[in-house]
Amino acid sequence: MASVARTGQLRQRTKLVQGSVPVPDPVTVMVREIQQNILNMQKQYECPICLELISEPRATDCGHYFCRECIIRHVNVSQKKAPVKCPLCKETVTKRSLVECSGMGDISEAIRQLMDSFQLDTGTMGKLLEP
Ligand SMILES: [Zn+2]
Ligand SMILES: [Zn+2]
Image (tube, rainbow, N blue to C red; front, side, top):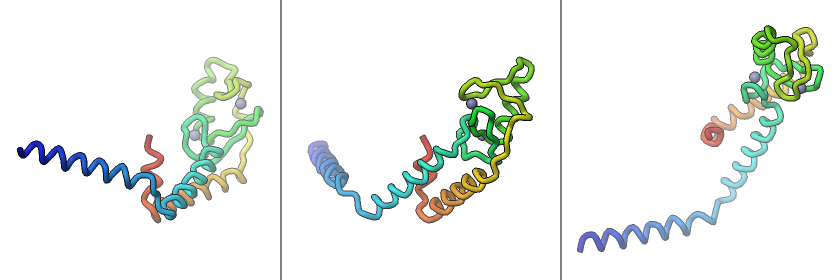
């Protein structure tokens, strides 16, 4: 008798949850859109080695961008098996050919700050970033 009643309750709860899913409130939709835009920007300024926002960007001759630390570590590790190749396109990379891009660093720093303040405001950015 008791188990029958429990099954009935469960069914009712499932129905309620399903019914509430297709109606997202406008604020949630807006927040998601902003979040998506920030993440898209982040993707464009992502370091292919560490997959974080590029810090102190360096450009290679082949036109790819990496964190200063990441690309220098890559060059140092690969140097024994010279020539060092770009992790993305396998063009030759030398430490001397790396070009500093401070303008790009400013942008990625701005995106980082945007993400920080967004997370402070909504508390959701971290959750979305987790796989
Ligand atoms: Zn990096
Ligand atoms: Zn390259």
